[in-house]
Length: 210
Image (cartoon, rainbow, N blue to C red; front, side, top):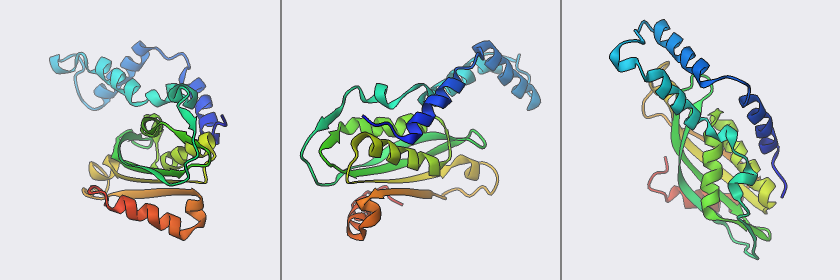
């Protein structure tokens, strides 16, 4: 199995993430943030907030501790299929690396097999693994596409992500209702307009497509 460049990069990130920072130090940092916000971290409602925030951040960044090998667990199979496989409307929850605020959206992922297929649930798991890291949407889209390309060497891979960014909604320009759409098209999806259009037509039939 060939790992994608982005997955190899994730191994470096994982090593960095394992630097010796204790939970106590992380909780102390959260406490300092609360003080900086003008709050009293010793009041009743905030006493356990540092512990909760650290637990939440570890969960939301758990993708750093995962690899494609562990995630797949052998769920790549030899199959002489040659038609498009599409999983659409995969819910995504990630965190913007600039403000550590939520990115909420969905992914549509397709590939055309070339002798190998992957368990359908693993496509959603791959999206989830990369989403649970500090991200920009453009990178997240590319990482999912690169991972499938590296794992399956298919005839083509297409990924479209639609998401709303809380850093635009809650702060800054405060534009609620705005959606960002990014795409990655590899192989025949990038080279053949008819194949690409077929994919786009299929995801447009989703009731959730913007």
